[in-house]
Length: 104
Image (spheres, one colour):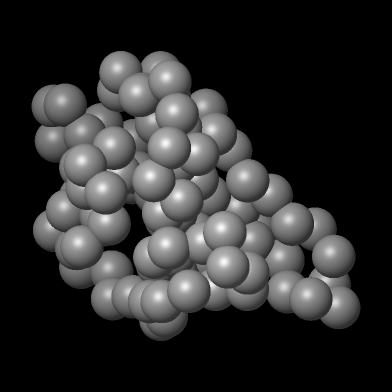
C-alpha cells in the first residue's frame, strides 16, 4: 500500500474497479512505491475535491520515448499514484464526495 498521503486515492481507484498495471520502484532510487493505473487522473478536480497533504505534487512526463504519464507524487514518502496522459478513462468519473456523475 502507498503512503498515508496517497492511500485515499488508491482506495478510490480500486473501488472504481481500476486494476493496477505496475507497482514497485519505478525508475530511480528516490522512488519507494509507485503504482500505475490505466486511467487519466483529473488532477485539478482531485485537488478541488480533496484536502491534499502539502507533500503531494503533480508529476507529468510528456516524453513519448520514455512513456507519458501524469499523477501525484508524495515528496515526503517518495510514493506515487500514476496514470496515463491520454487514451484512457478519466478519473474521477463521479463526484467522489457525492457519488454523482462527473460534470464535464
